[in-house]
Length: 83
Image (cartoon, rainbow, N blue to C red; front, side):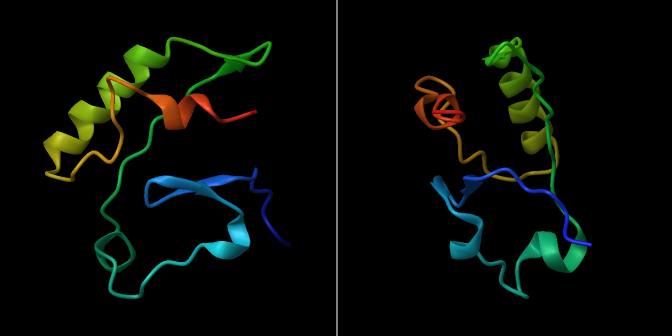
């Protein structure tokens, strides 16, 4: 069974079709399971409390010493989802 994955996917700082992405077998997240996630609910095509979610994500990333690839000031990339 193939899992459902919405496209495009956010990969290494850009939105890409899933077929154009890959994960290195040397990636720390792949090797050790390092990673974080934050779920943002969407109601009527509007993300709910985006700022709170992104700040919580930034705090979690800092807690495990991973760089945050998102620009919280501009947030232009994550706002493109759904366009």
